[in-house]
Image 1 (cartoon, one colour):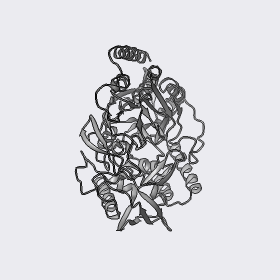
Image 2 (tube, helix red, strand yellow):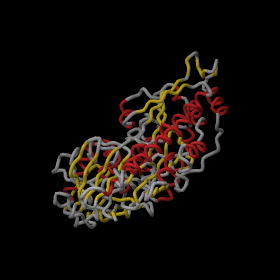
Image 3 (cartoon, helix red, strand yellow):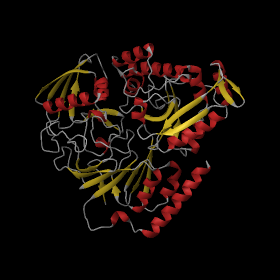
Image 4 (cartoon, helix red, strand yellow):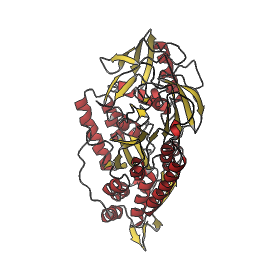
Length: 509
């Protein structure tokens, strides 16, 4: 952990110098416009809301979805859709609001939504897989949709940011999508920032701000310094080890909110060693979850033993497992490995693993280093490689063994999204290449199950099956961290879903 203290010292020195050289940079300048600058932890090269995986368009208040997640109740609620109904879970009627316009003034009606959903499914096969829409008919402000199978949780899939509704008559989706949100794009610099201005015709009441800047920077230290200098008013995901320093800055508030997120060790089933469940169990035994929460997350999170936080009704009670080096060795012995000369090997071949991770969530490389250190104690060599776009890398390459990755597992308050996306053969997040007929059958049974009690019971069975087969290892449920200048910013809300950031309610003093 020595590197952490060196980093903290460098940050402290830089903060001191900035404080000496600047006088509230956020208030300088002649402009009286009411604006905020938000610094986000991932970079976006595109604003295409139906494809883009950092969900900047919905987070920046450019686009919206038919259905919304209420962060207080954790239940879905009407948004652009006023109501929906189905008698059989397969044929759906959706009634749209009649007071919504796109940011170019065009009306949002059934034909516009039909065109937008069809465009989303064409541009992103993962959207088609998730929605399972077979046909759409539009009549005024009413939509008639049919799914390819009874799908009770269809409305919850309409929360996903990639189902955002856009005006398809405006085709520059990459640089200037036209949505229905409170802010419209005024300029976009790929990889750097998107400048926004208020859309006065917003259906839920015009934004209190005149505009905003949504900037990107994957360097956690740089994000903290930007807050101090006044370059940023809101910083998403400051580094946990720097929080005490950030809290000491005048006028800065730090929010820590429990989320639906899990950091996980994703296993590549195409990797020879990882095809053996005993090897996967060995790697799981090496994860020092409590220590990671305490020393990497600084206590701002919980150990994870499955994908879903224990507060959810569909999270099972997991059986106790032997953890630590000796337990890992025992699992490897069952897989035919022995330790010789400090090297874990089988048939003369050493057990070496390539682990990929990324800087966008600064704790992930640190967790990877802790895992690497534990693996080395039993003769497993772990090579850590940082990548910029983990989803793209894992989808396009099979040269990795494990990935320290992060997922929102229940962003709609239901287990179906994560289980379909991660474990179904057609799932958009099934980077592991998992194809298990029994597991697929259980997931498809879940998709056709109506009633929360019944769905929770079946979701528990699925989660227990995943645990038994150790398809992934779950490490921690981290809190969502946001630091902001509360001397300037008002009505900021740190949400569990991490979806809704720049809203019409956000204001400055």
